[in-house]
Length: 292
Figure 1 (cartoon, one colour):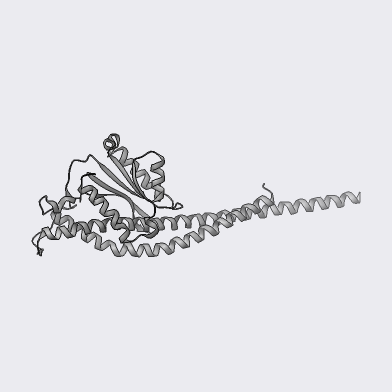
Figure 2: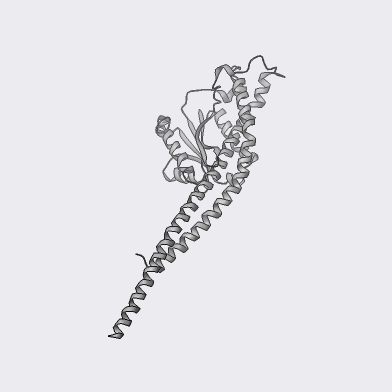
């Protein structure tokens, strides 16, 4: 049985850890409320805009206005990997990294072997992992989540769209965690470019809509805006998911610390009781010896 000093030290250490994890849980919960509000407000607009864009793209012939829906042979691939800057959020980052590696070594194995696959890492955790394992990281953005707003995301989305339009890449995918609720996230691999066709072919825009001035002009305005919104939505999803995952992880860590404290206090009381019993026995033995 450990001595009293050892148990006391462990109790102090676990109690200190419990206070830290509890504080981190409260901070994550506070940040989550703001991030959750942002993504829940944007999501309906982004989804409707994407449906409109896909339906409109399906009705147009290939032209300059539909360069972002230009489906060509996939030779050069860019994977945008979205992780967090900080840890202590459970499997949030490792799931994204594993999914990216799975895609690299399965779906895009040929491109990777040819040297035609590149990674754009948003978030420090993903950038550190892939750079440390000699993957082709062409760019890493480590500051975006420090101030995540539409203006900051806009320049990144424009750059990706330009790279695709100039045929630097034939396909761009985004790997991120979609926010479901505070305790659950959905890992997604989403095709960013070219614009994917409608999931339901029968849902394309028909004569129910009257276009003014015409479809081409609308497409010219709608496509860039929709792509930027979709990219911004993915980052907001990831940001909300990060705080949800961290809040859940810290909640579990706090609960585990509470259970461990109970066990340690019980162990301490047993050790203390044994120590007192030994002292009593020594006193009794000494008294008996004096009588003799």
